Image 1 (tube, rainbow, N blue to C red):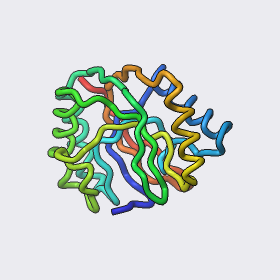
Image 2: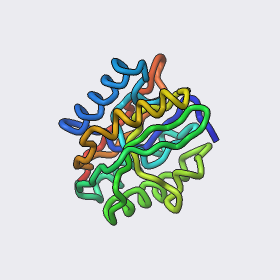
Image 3: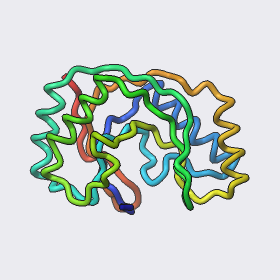
Image 4: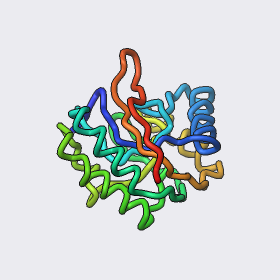
Length: 182
């Protein structure tokens, strides 16, 4: 299932993590003409995406979930690719018990308000990641981008301290709500 204008339940990257990711996006644009961030150019870690959410029902569930959790830290590891006509280049986020528990709680606490849930965001299939790029590239272009990225130190820590809703905007996605954890 492909969703052109996705809604997403995410943690927004802020501070150093946001700067690092956006710097990678800018370098890829400068060096290779690759548009960073994929369809949602907001620095984030997605827990669930949907074609649409029933927004009024979602607000209280997100607020309650955010209040019930404390901030935690996760580790970013290697660059990976999902190959296809428009390959997805991403940084894998290491699966920790805190992260998996949080994503599970987001899923269980919000799926009732979602339409068109892609199955790869179900807790049994979810691969935590930060999207670097998602666009049509030749095999040669993809190889050069991967070589460029693997030469970089891409292992850093992310502080997960918020839960947000990203939704389609007039020209680009926007943050509708952001709730601090704790």
